[in-house]
Image (spheres, rainbow, N blue to C red):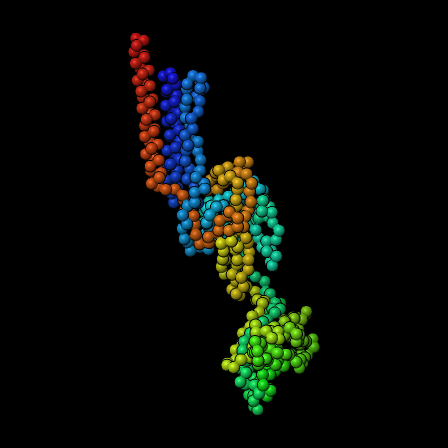
Length: 433
């Protein structure tokens, strides 16, 4: 190796180690940056312009990201702060509801908050993307190998339309000791709330009258005005494994004034009331429990009790959101309803080292990343979504300081090579004199 070649090699060492020190400085500066992935430099030997034939070798630093090393989780009080526990990334865009596939990126920086329009955006200005729910149909059939079915997650869906009540399940106990008496006494009364198509709250009343025959009751159902809709007699079993359950329903009587109607299915134990409360009457099924079944009304010795489980709701306003580990984002409304709004997928790529680093701790896809899939969280190799948590930087300060010392010494050593070459050149110059 000639003196000039030694000088060239020393310079390449200075440049490579300088680049490595620059990367270490970036790591230390971002030690507290959410979702940051440390970078590092690998030294690669290359042939200088003279090639191997002349024996001249140099070095350069190749930058890489320690992208698969997971940072520690930091707990927060915000349900829209998200972290991936395991492998994978969130899908984000630079603008809301981006339709161009190339403008979709990946990140693990999940510090999302709603903007003025309710779109979830992180501190770097990237908007969270997810699959929207379509009512009871869920997210439907989506293409998880592309971004085309995704949209920006928006939690500004502040109202939930009213839903009319269509079914009411009745449970509880009737005191058997009150039947079969000469004077059975007054009926037991209770009521349940139901909602009209406009979300108005109304009530149906139930009057349970014990009769002089043992284990027999007459129940009368009335509307919000106190007008009777219909009645039915219920006989209960008193022996065997079905003791306490309805044995038979009889004496079905429609007391409603048209267009309201009362009907009863004695085989299923379901009363159907048609209420005149709109242009189209509202139909509600009241499930008392089938014969020989103990999941509805029962009769045992003890106290009277009755509870109701109904569907339907009034108009509701969004009070908060909840996100579970599978990435399902639910809206919780002040009318007690809970509705699925989005599924937040976890993006998986075949080769994470093929991702292109962007500003804001985001990454773009390239030809080297291989296959892409927007996987459901917790499925296959995808990690879980942690709500109320953030992933910290994966930088280890002690490791960085150790690398810094090592690179500094390497830099000094290469500088010594250049100083030595300079002295040799100076000595050569003196020889010519």
